[in-house]
Length: 343
Ligand code: GTP
Ligand code: MG
Ligand code: NA
Image 1 (cartoon, protein in one colour):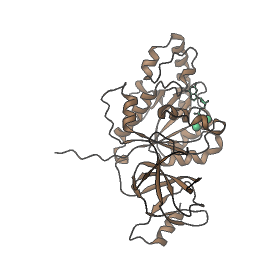
Image 2 (cartoon, rainbow, N blue to C red; image 1 turned 180 degrees about the horizontal axis):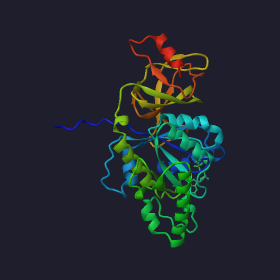
Image 3 (cartoon, rainbow, N blue to C red; image 1 turned 90 degrees about the vertical axis):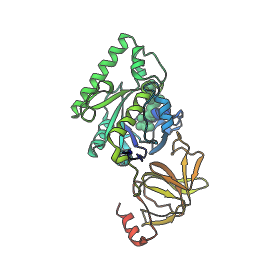
Image 4 (cartoon, helix red, strand yellow; image 1 turned 180 degrees about the vertical axis):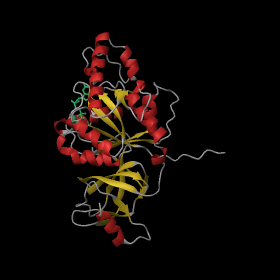
């Protein structure tokens, strides 16, 4: 019997956590970019999105397992702000992701927005991996750039290992107080019930291979049904933005289905439903952040999962966080408008 051809879309992974735990920096480390240093006050104030193609993930994880089978086309990562005033953006991110990375600063342990993020994820039963970040700040840490974490740990003195273990134990205890079992990922024998912790450094890259591989493997192992590509459109407006030369544009995350240039769409507007036609479908280059203005790739069609900038007329009053609908050839425009405003 011929095995059913798998048609998986990219998993959507949200990165969440308290302010300044290193969410954006971790993404910078994987992308080879410097988005974080360009942020006002070093604070993320918008939702971001980056597409990581499978070939990059394969490259970054090859030291761990040369034959790691990556079946998904890539990984779409949503960056969220950790500052307390952006609860709505964290909620928007957690609402559309398949899985998440919860970032904890090893020097600080659990903080208020760690717990808030944790609760948002639990509310939707979203699986997540804990990135215990900033391990390079342990006193005496010896850098092994971009190394798998177990290899990096072997380089450390007994004092560093002791400090690491003390802080790790304290974080595990703090999670326990929140009713959650956690364990270092390579000691975790019951993933699903016990959440995995991956120690990382966003500055020197230790643990990044582990984090990427774990995310992809976990998604492929447990989420095949969710990740099987479906034609039915599922698309959320992330941000509404004026871009020079394009007017008001919307940044969307396409979770399922496809969008085409020329599609008639309807989105929720603060002054009523907006019916318009997609003028252009733009994506940033792979490994580039959508929220950073740059060169875009033009597409006639984009299939899920992707982050897309849509240009069209009349988007001025579009409302972020709502769904985008495509009006099919046999569909009634008035019905579609009603559906759009139900968000
Ligand atoms: P918000 O988006 O504003 O919530 O912050 P964030 O979680 O994205 O953190 P960000 O990437 O802005 O990093 C905050 C600060 O911590 C920056 O100064 C980073 O350089 C620093 N930082 C992040 N990760 C690491 C790390 O692994 N090691 C060290 N030493 N510093 C880090
Ligand atoms: Mg950030
Ligand atoms: Na920050």
